Length: 79
Image 1 (cartoon, rainbow, N blue to C red):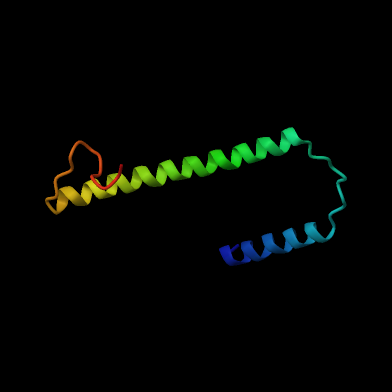
Image 2 (tube, helix red, strand yellow):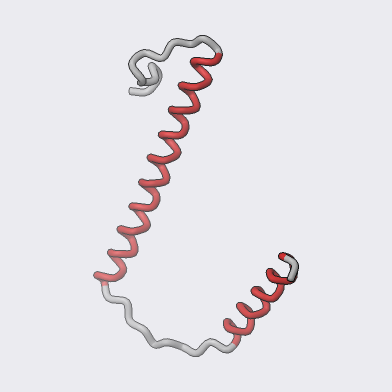
């Protein structure tokens, strides 16, 4: 199967499942909601740290390539 036909098949199955879904009558207590919020905040924090680390490495690399000195691994404009 081609990738395009796999995508169409997956979307068709997803649509069929959504149309035939029955209500769950589920209850989310405050503890569950706070765990979801905590997981979401942790994901945002991890993404921020990863992006910041990549930005610092990239900035350091281009600083070395173009002859700019990096003082102690910290950016001078960051406080």
